[in-house]
Amino acid sequence: MVPGGCEVWYGDAPYYVKLIGPPGTLASDILRLKSDLPRCNCDLEIIGNDVRDTIKKAMIEDDDIDPDVEDCSEEVAQLPLIAFDADQHFSKNPTYKKEIRYLLQSRGSPHVVQLLGRTKDGALVFPKFEHDSVTNIMSHKNEGRVQNIRRWMLEVIDGVAYLHSLGICHNATPHCRPVEIDDGDYSKFSFANDVFALGTLLWTYCFYNNPLNREVLLDTPPPPPFRDIFIACTQERVGDRPAITQLRAMYDTIRLPNH
Image 1 (cartoon, rainbow, N blue to C red):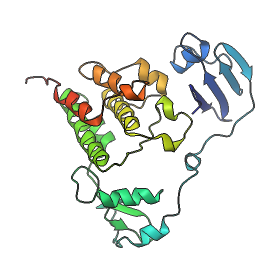
Image 2: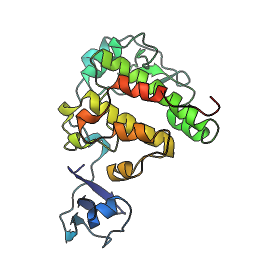
Image 3: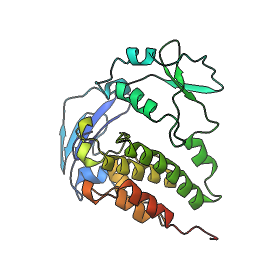
Image 4: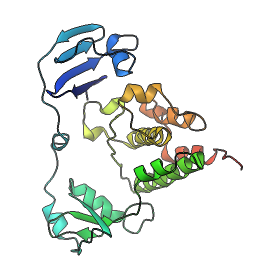
């Protein structure tokens, strides 16, 4: 992510494009899907209305997003060994020591997925659920739409609120980050970043999709009754975003159809 802009790769090459510009410029219009790239099949840098060739930059792979992944083997070894059953469990590789510490702190909470133990290969083991959030969204597009979105968001908010009560920041890194962590400095994560991430999640629930970039996210807020909540969550100034308790209260005031 470029501070104030975006980096994208496209095509078979793939070609690299850097876009930075305020509203009303060519770069901004491209980010907002209002204009096409002026030239294709080449590496470009578009700053405002200025278009110029640039040096190709290697595509960022998933494994390269966080270079600070830690060796957690000692912490994982202390977890109980689980006879992994794909029908009952799912697993993931650990990334941070504090991740394991926070999961252990959250044991017993009905709002946080429970860490069961480890596999022989050192992966973390969790209970497997019948449906994930994406499946839930796609299978409930019409029936009880407002009720479902409100219920799903409250469930997630309760989980994040529980973490906050322990002094834990969820540190979710959605594709559309708030501007204060554009530079990828994870030390800047705060409870307010979690609230921004909850706004992005709300957008996903409302539109059944992930926003392409922050410009698309902020330019197309969800319709009522979720519009004002989304706008509050995605304020540029950290101090203007609601606290997690205030956010929950905002959802509690939503009037449901037939209620």
